[in-house]
Length: 100
Figure 1 (tube, one colour):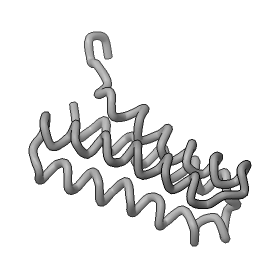
Figure 2: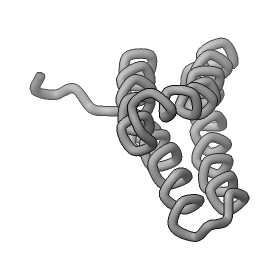
Figure 3: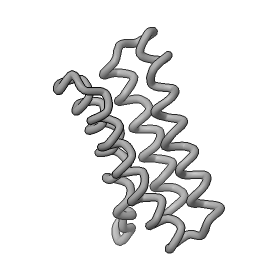
Figure 4: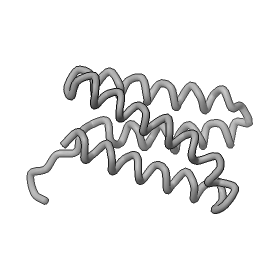
């Protein structure tokens, strides 16, 4: 739709999930992936809390962290990158819907 801006946190949460996985996978350092994930999640949560309030911020943070957690068992069924893609798409769509 014309004129509908996407909240700045939508690409940030997508980058946090995809970037966190990529950083961990290609560096061989899981903690590096955790830093990327935490930085994106922390920054986004601060944005949500200031613009949408604590209830939305808490719900979106739970969605973000739940996506990270769900990606692991999902990866056993569909593969690592497909799992990351699925949880990222769902998280980004949820973020877009709740920050619209």
